[in-house]
Image (tube, rainbow, N blue to C red; front, top):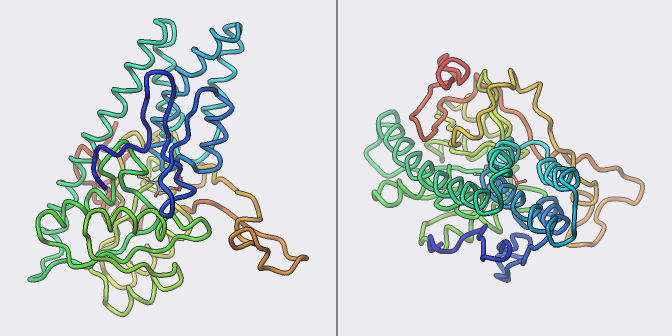
Length: 343
Ligand code: MRU
């Protein structure tokens, strides 16, 4: 994906979001000029991925201010709109952190809020670049192979999910740039297919060799020895290293532990929430049943069946071999928990 293609972009009058619900078949943007449209876009996953919704949320504070001025809102109404943006999805802490950061500039006016949102985006790209280097260096040091690596990833953590470059996918891109990547196994990521629709699309843009596999294939692929390391992103990381990420991630981590290969989490420190002690305290978003009971809008499960649709799961810190942030690498399973090292 050319780096200039940005998932979240301020146009001067509103927010242009690449519509991630229609990729890879169509490349369209959604023009967001009011808070309702933004909340809807975040909830429908037009924009998704923890850092990307954080950036969108920060611009949402500016949108609330502009809309408030246009429609004659009171200060209280502006703050209520900001809090709807902040609560649009519950699991990724980046949304709350970035909205709060932009809100802290609210008294200075809309230009200051926009400046803060732009800084959030800039810092995210810088963090991703740093993570790419730290993660690739760590892997090369720990996985001493005389051939390029075969890496598994889950969900989408690339430029689409961030302000640019990517977290876990940024590490993968860095390995590829160094000529040290053989192939990526991209889990399709049920039920909304962020892996097969979005990660595969980004990998195609980058010319990175890959297979898309169903989520149910991941453990077998790992246990058969076809993977050298798994690298995923995160939506919230607790002080003890427990990590919430897209549903299906914990199964990958368990298989990696059994196979004795590294399970890496790559995430900026904005995803680490030291006020959340353990994974038990992370609010896991439950999404609508239809996402699992239907396929392409057609009901596939019996009419009487109910659906269970948690969007995320929690991988215990003991299964996280290493956490890659822009500050460096913590070997969480070996006891380097964020609560002690990232204060
Ligand atoms: O529901 P989504 O698509 O927003 O879930 C995204 C993930 O779980 C990502 O792995 C995570 O946000 C990290 S993105 C750099």
